[in-house]
Length: 247
Image (tube, rainbow, N blue to C red; front, side, top):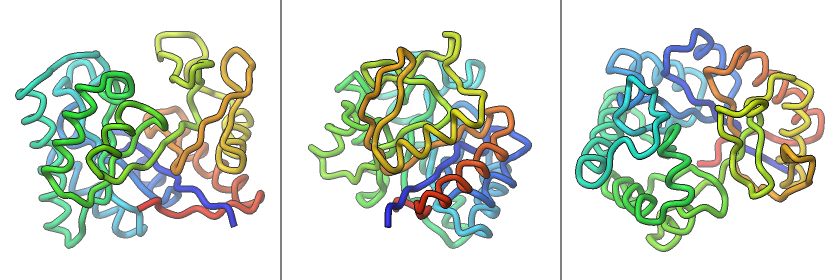
């Protein structure tokens, strides 16, 4: 049977987080860089545990004002220490609740930057390996992050988005461009089925491109995120796709 992980970015202040965590199989929790604090991390982890959802860290450039969406906001040792602090902060809260992190997924501009910047990708891989050798990295398939993780024997989970448009080169369409975020549930569910069952999708130009992923993401801050997640789960199961955590 075909299977896929369904993940959501949570702990960022969205009102639908609790509902989302009753639907998805894994989550990525904001841990202080762009959003989140000790209270939100604890609340989100408790809800994830209650719903048997795999828990991951969602670190970013230390840029709360820009919600982690400004490229190159930090670099070098300063970025290393910030990322390490973010991940270990969430891991400490997870340990206090008797659980462990399974993965780390960079957020926002950092996610986009590590896809193409090998030096930055290696920095992120080294931070994750420093925290724990068995924690997986989640990111774009075929990216510099994926290659750096493979070179360092760090587990890697390839991700695609059901609610975002893609360019013909397999990159996400920038949020600043029209149509970057899908709003029609039928388009979203069709993209989810195509990704999960065939490893492909129709990009913004109308061409069919290959995107082979282990996990599909729904952004927690997308309007109607819980309804979208529920519709995606329903359609995937109707097509014989099982949903469970990748890690």
